[in-house]
Image (cartoon, rainbow, N blue to C red; front, side, top):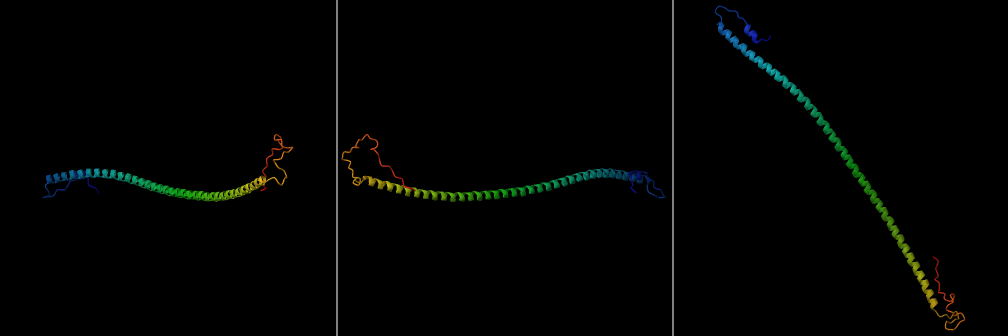
Length: 182
């Protein structure tokens, strides 16, 4: 059972013969009642403050819980982003390496083709030069034959001939070039 300041103030004590001094006891009880009343008020104020602090603490714990879960979610998201970025970077590097290999392979193939082409052109050049030499040699022999005296023909250009008309187009025939097969 709780004793309130009113209980103390209304408490009636039995008196006995030679008991306590009534005025002093009443004064003391009055002082005790005032102290208990003051302590009760302070206790109520403290309980209200405690209740407010408990509510504030509960709110702070909820906020902390929310912040913690947000932080964990954010960290998880950041980790996922990092992993995704790492995968993307690895893919980009692999694609670049594959592209570089492809370009290098194409360049090598083109180099081989160019070397074949150059080799073919050199062979064609050698063949053309050989044909040109043969043709020039043939022309050279033809010129030598044409420069030999016409003894074989039995004609002399100094003798007047009935065909000596220089205006006749049939007489002004120049030697034609002979083409070799090849």
